[in-house]
Image 1 (cartoon, rainbow, N blue to C red):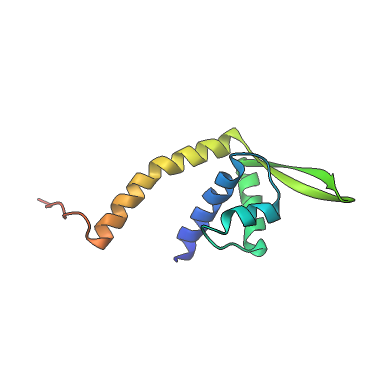
Image 2: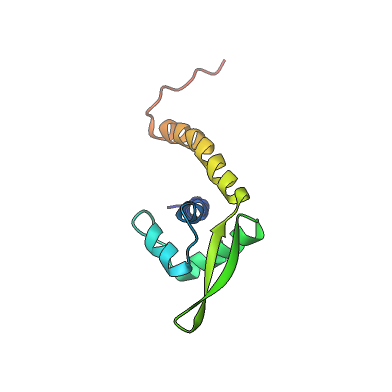
Length: 108
């Protein structure tokens, strides 16, 4: 898969993994992996970018004597998910054009 396309999809997948509740890195990977592969070295830069874009916030909780970072989707992150859903129709139209599943429009 094209790296740029995968990067964008992974960001949306991380937000989708958080839409039902706060989570931590390892759990996010487990939630996403049935759909698209992601490693820790890929996830954490995505989480930082999403935090910088105000799509999520981070807080720490003690767990087994250590601090665990939890990620929480923000209203801006939820808006990004909604935007992606509306953009998906355009992506599917492009896909159908590429695969020939739609008739080409005559250009005059």
